[in-house]
Length: 266
Ligand SMILES: Nc1ncnc2c1ncn2[C@@H]1O[C@H](COP(=O)(O)OP(=O)(O)OP(=O)(O)O)[C@@H](O)[C@H]1O
Image 1: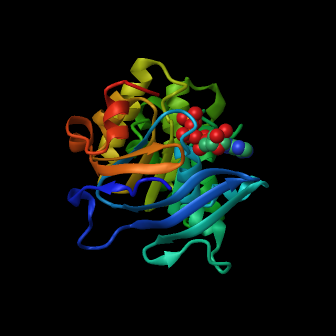
Image 2: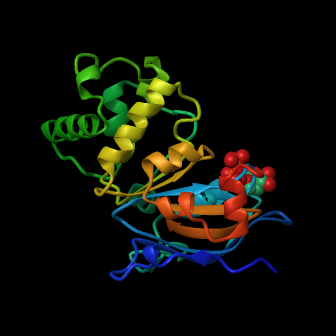
C-alpha cells in the first residue's frame, strides 16, 4: 500500500480546477503503470510532472486527452473531468476533447504538408473558419503566438518537415493553439532539441502561461524549476507529492521527493 500523496495547501484550488483526476489507474495488460493517482490541474499555471524514468508520468499525462485509447492493451480506471465533465463518458466526442486538450509530443511531428496547412488542418475539420481570410488570420495568429510568424511568413507554402527541429516543435505548438484549446499537454517537448531551441520553447511556454492550462512532463528537473509553478513528483506509478514548484524543490516533505530532488536516486 503506497503512502498517501502529500498535497501542499498551495495547490488546493478554491475556485475549482480545470481538470481533475481521481483514483486513476492505468494498466498495460497485467502491468500497472499508474496507481490511484488524484490531482487537480489549475488553468492559470504550468504544472510539471517529474520523476524517474518509467514512473508513469507520460502514461498519466496521456489519460487527460484519452491518448491511451490508441494503445490496445492500455486500460484506464478512475475518473478524469474537464470543467466538471467526465471525459471517459461514452458520449464524450474524443475528437472534440483532443481539440480542447491539445498535445505536443517528444519528437516534433508536423504533417508532411505546408507550414500553412499544418496550422489550417485542425481549424478546418472543426469548422472554425468559413472564409479564406478567416483561415489566414487563424494561421497568422497561431504562428505569432508560437513565436514563429516572423521566421516563416514568407514561406508558408514550404513543407513543415523541412524546418529545424526547434521550429518544427514550435509549429506543433502553433498547430495545437490553432483550435483554441483550453489545456495543452506537453510530453518531454524539448528532449529532441538542442539547448538554444530548448530555451526558445521554455520562453514560449512562459508566454503561453495563463492563456491555457499547461501540463508538461519532463525528466529535466532544472526545466521543471524554470518553467512550472506547480510540480507533481511521481515514483513507481504513485503521485508522491504535489505542491508549488519552489516548495517542492526547496522544501520537499516526502522522503522519496527529497531523495529524488537531491539526486539520491533516479
Ligand atoms: N505502450 C506501452 N505498452 C506497455 N507498457 C508500457 C507502454 N508505455 C509505457 N509502458 C510501461 O509503463 C510504465 C510507465 O511508463 P511511462 O512511459 O508512462 O513512464 P515515464 O515516467 O513517462 O518514463 P520516461 O520518462 O522514461 O518516458 C513503464 O514500466 C513502461 O515500460
